[in-house]
Image (cartoon, rainbow, N blue to C red):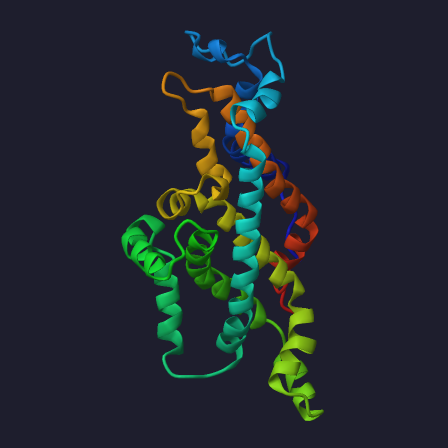
Length: 280
């Protein structure tokens, strides 16, 4: 049995966690504070972190400054959901094949998938633009969905493959003895057991797809009504000034869907991340 932590060790752990949370949450807190202050007070010198003239006016005015803000938020959610769904359709059979089957160049192809994750979208913008233009997908939702799927499939395969490998092979072999096909076994035996892993992969892909929309949107899409929120926030930047308080308010509102999804799926994420951590 693992020894208990000493009081000094517990104090050190809590201090490290507190520092980590400060670095993680302080930018969001500052965004919230900036959204509550009048625009002219954001440029005071010296800078005031705390003010007595807070108001929620920016949260009502932002819808007037950018009338399509609601559409931008919907586009971000729709694009991220579409990328997640399509990615999972390709990832599930591919991850199962890498976890259970033996075929030529298996290790090398996994290494190639890992290498793909090392490239940023900016490196491949020009060839992606030419491909999407030849397919007639520019200025459509697909112009942002297809690159997102392409970049996130390797991530999904690596995440789900490691989880599927922890499922005992004996369960599948018992199904084969009863006459079940491999596809039936995958659908009826493996996937129900892999639900926590699927949730972890789905949430991870959704968050990644939600976060990477800006570069693809400004490059492959010029239709205003189809822009996601990261690109739509540019409309708060005017010729003479930038309405920072309204931009911060809109950014926080745009983050709320991801936060709600993460909080709702938290128990499933914990179950998926800890499954197989202890070997019996």
